[in-house]
Length: 187
Image (cartoon, rainbow, N blue to C red; front, side, top):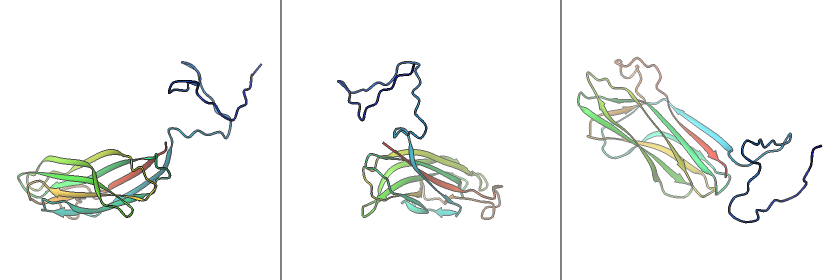
């Protein structure tokens, strides 16, 4: 015989946890039922395949950005960044420093992560690499958030992101796409 308990609300008696089931138990939802925990609300992605070069020791825009509007003030945004074709155009040791900035609608840009490509050493104009990172951002807002990548040279030598073989014949890659992926993690 199967028992049924029909209620509109379960309220915890005391403490901070409400336990459903015991160790080793499976909790099964009925057909069409959903839960709100552990869900991804939206996934957005942009791919950038344009080369950006600089000798500046101050940050410059890479030209890659992506915006998302959280559906809840409790949502978090998981940002995944993959920057391909990091290249130095010198025979000396150089570094590329990149940063992830977020600008809320009507607000000012804030740096929320720095991804370093230090230790690139060029020999005869070679040294391609990938710089990747993930950041979990809590905007605490339902205003649009725009994420962008900036880069700079550590020592003032030429550094490049998005290098491909049409612009630098020493490299064999025909496409070095970089990307930003944004995922809204629901509360």
